[in-house]
Structures are given as C-alpha cells and as structure tokens.
Image (cartoon, rainbow, N blue to C red; front, top):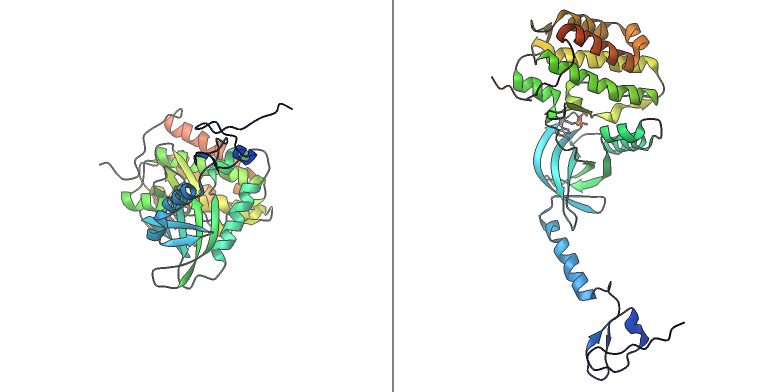
Length: 317
Ligand SMILES: Nc1ncnc2c1ncn2[C@@H]1O[C@H](COP(=O)(O)OP(=O)(O)OP(=O)(O)O)[C@@H](O)[C@H]1O
C-alpha cells in the first residue's frame, strides 16, 4: 500500500484522514478542505431540494408521493375526467391524470392500473414493440379535489402527439372522414388487437371514444382498458372486432348516429365493414391479423397501392 499524507492545500499542514471523504477544517489555517470530488455540502443540498420542490405549492393534485399541476382538460368519460398535467419537482414530467367522478365506485381506477400493468408486464413475442403502443400507468392514489372531497386519481404517461379521440374527430368534421384515413385507422387498431388477443386479452369497449389518434404518424392508441379481461375468450375477441367495425362505420357515416355510409366510401370497403360489424363467426374465423390483411386487400381494390396522405383531425374545407 502506498502511504498517503493529506496536506492542507492552503498552508501545507497535515490533515486528518477523514478529509478523504468529508469536509474537515484545517486546525492551523482554518480552511475547509476535502479530497472528495463528489461531496455536496448539506446546506447546498438542502437549498437545491427546497428549490426543486418549489412547484409543490402551486400543484393541485397529489398522488403516489408526487405533486401534479393540471394544465389542460382533455376530455371526460363515464368514470373520470381526464387532464394534462405537469409533475412538479427536480425532474418535471408531463402526464395524463384521470380523476374519478363523484359516485364512481371506489377502486375502479386502481383496477384499470392493475390491467395496464399486466399488459405492460406481458413477456410474449412482440412485447417490446407493442407495450410502447399501449397506455402506461404511473401511479394510482387519492387526492383532494376542487370540492374538497377525496377522489381516486390515476396517473398515466403522456403519450405525445395524440390529438384526441376518434369521437372528437367525428364531432369536429360533422360528416364522414375520407375513407382512405379510415383504412389506416382500422389497420392500426387491428395490429395492436392481434397482439393483445394473442396473449388472451379482449378489450370489451372499443368505441371511437376509446381510440386516440396521432395525426402526424397515422397512429391510433387504444384507451379505456378498465373492462378488459384475459380469458382467451374467442367470442369476446370476435366482439372486439365487431365493435371496431362499428367504430369505423361511425367515422364513415353520412350523419352522426346513423349507420349510413357516405357516398365516397368505396364498395369493397362498405362490404367489409358491413360483414365485420354483423358476422361474428366470420370475425372469429379471420381473427385480428386476418382482418388486418383483408382490410389491406379491400383498400387496394378500392384505392390502389397504399400511399401516405396527410391527415388533419379537423376539417380543412
Ligand atoms: N391521452 C389523452 N389525450 C387526449 N385525450 C384523452 C386522453 N386520454 C383520454 N382522453 C379523452 O378523455 C376521454 C375519456 O377518457 P377515458 O375513456 O379513459 O375515461 P373513462 O372515464 O375511463 O371512460 P369510460 O369509463 O367511459 O371508459 C376520451 O374519450 C378522450 O376524449
């Protein structure tokens, strides 16, 4: 072992060996000295910590030991209202908060988190890719809301780039969307369904409200998983495919609430949608992957080879 003498860099006097890992005061000249490069003074650390928590005072929701400041309302469903929020602290992060309505049964959001956690934990082929295309829960808890009552809160990672639900798109258009856009929306959902169905899950509530659209990437995120089950139930999985076909029919219907196709919807697509929304046995025999391929074939018959067309979630004319 090489002997080591620690000397004060100011006066050259010997220092105690604690100077290797903490600050010591030189007994001769009074200088504060340490050899460690990682050391932070307790007072500096405390001041930085207090600075990092300065946003907590303006936060309105506390959950899982973190504080969140809501910044925009995103929507509302049957059980919760949904907001965009910022996590306060040294590492701010944008999240989505679901805050249970008054009267929502206790534990509903906790169940949703448990289902999302199980979906994320699946270790099946394709998991690395598809778990990125499913919602990710961060924490669940309860927090005082504006009316002073405790409400259940679910914190989700914020999926960037998603504009809103297909129900919002339909509302913004007030008429059918271009059927070429319905094709990629349908196929995107079927890709994810093929993955989740293969691991035995069924969603159970596939409606336009539960499909968020990413206009720039032509992406669709399935939300609303609180009713999902994992029973390898082929009937329930066929029902998912039928519900999805009805959601697509809603996007292509001439007027909201009436399943009448717009005149711009080509015949091969109309035939597919009608059969997929009514024939459970056919849906079960095709499965999500078979249906994805069939939609691709019908789209090719109707529009020719696939090409990217810009999508705007609000009408431009
Ligand atoms: N990440 C998001 N970005 C934009 N809007 C969102 C997002 N998440 C949810 N929304 C909006 O909030 C609405 C309600 O969300 P969600 O379906 O998760 O709530 P819910 O109360 O669980 O609904 P329900 O109980 O009816 O299934 C959605 O239809 C959508 O319009």
